[in-house]
Length: 105
Image (cartoon, rainbow, N blue to C red; front, side, top):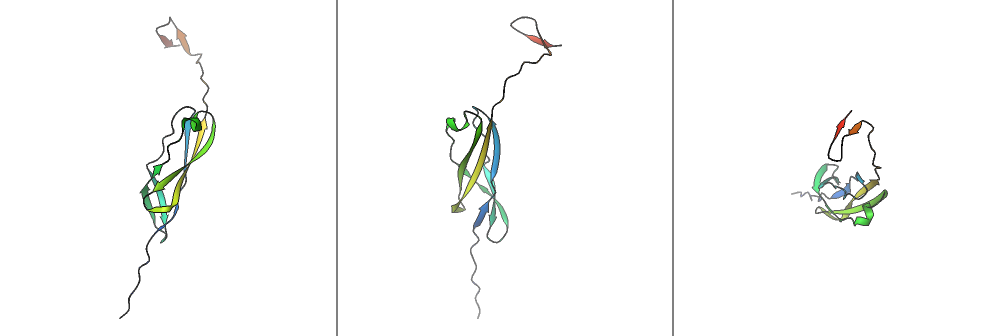
């Protein structure tokens, strides 16, 4: 009689996440990521991200966050967040009648 020992399928890697946010706005991070398993299959897995501190997204720049997945204690999810500053602009196509309203030209 021959026995085959099954090898446990484990997480080999997790796809990186990239997002953009505006300075001062908390980035919206995905609730799932795609994991590549040791058998080559891919699987959507839930992720819990470390909460960024307001100073990380207060001004333009880039920072990374780590996330944990329940399928692995050693493989971490990584998110790269790019923070952009948007300058306010005033359209020349607006005609102001008074302080309470405006209309397009």
